[in-house]
Length: 325
Image (cartoon, rainbow, N blue to C red; front, side, top):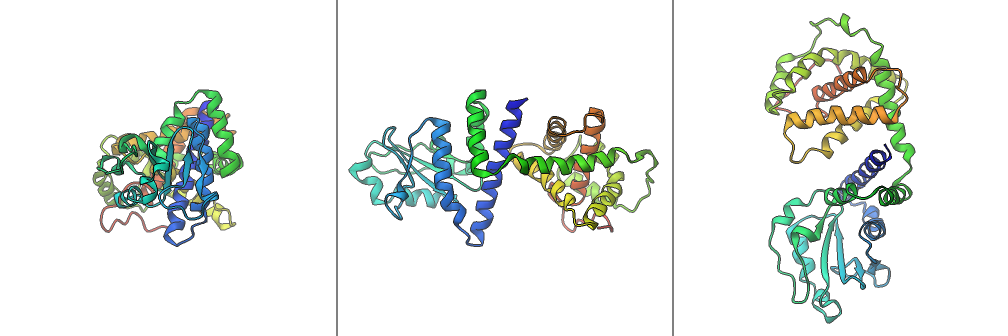
C-alpha cells in the first residue's frame, strides 16, 4: 500500500533528522540546526499551506524569529533547545513587542526531542502576540500526526519533499535488505534441534521481564530466548567479513522501539514492534516464498534477541544476560 510506504519513509527520515540534530548539538556541530530552518520552512509551507520565509536570510541573527509568514500573520522560532526558559526568552525579545508583529501568532518548533511537556506550561506572550502552547508548539510527533491524516496526493507531495531533502529511498531499502537477509538465513535454521540448556542466563532475562512489566510478552520471550545463540552466530558470520548487518538490524529494531516509546505499556509496545517490523518486511522485501507466519516468527526471534542484548527496554541494575558476545 502506497500510503503506508510513504508515511513510513517520512516518519523514519524525520525522526532520524531529530536524532542527528540532538546528538550533533551535544558535540557543538550545528550545521543541521541551520539547514533545518529552510527544511522546516518548506515542510510547513507544504503541510499547512503557509507562506513562510526565512527571516535570517534577510536579516542576520534575528532574535526570537526564524521564519515569518506575513500573509497568515505567523512568526516561528525553531530550536533544538526544548525548555520553558527558551520559549520565555523568545517571547521576551523586543522584536516581538514591536508594532511590526502586532496581531501575529507565535509558534515554536522543537527540532530535536519530544516537546510534549512544554505544552503543559504557562507562558506570558507580549501584548498583541497570540500564543497557545497546546496548539502552537510543534515537534516531530505532532507534525507526523498531521502528516498521517493527509489525503494520498498530499502525502505523496510530502514524501517527495522529504526524499529530496533528507535522503533517497535507497537508504531505507538497504536497511530492509539487511533485515531480509538475516530473516532468510534464520528461516532455514532447524529451530527444533536447539539445545534448551545453552548458556544463557534465564534468571537475568526474567529480571528484565519483570523490571519492564512484560506480563503477556513473557511467553514469547521465554519461547524465543533459546534462539539467541543462532542469531548471534548469524550476526558473527556477517560481521566477520566486514558486513555491518548486525548493527543495521539492531538499529532498525531499536528505532522502532524509540519511535513508539512514549505512552505505550511494555506489552503493547513489544507486540507493536513485532507486527510493525513484520508488515514492513512483508511489503518491502523479496521474501514472498517464506510464509507470513514464519516471517513473523523470525521477526519475533530478532526482537527477543535485541531485548536480551540490551538494545530495547530498560535494564535492571547489573543486568548480565549471557557470557557470549
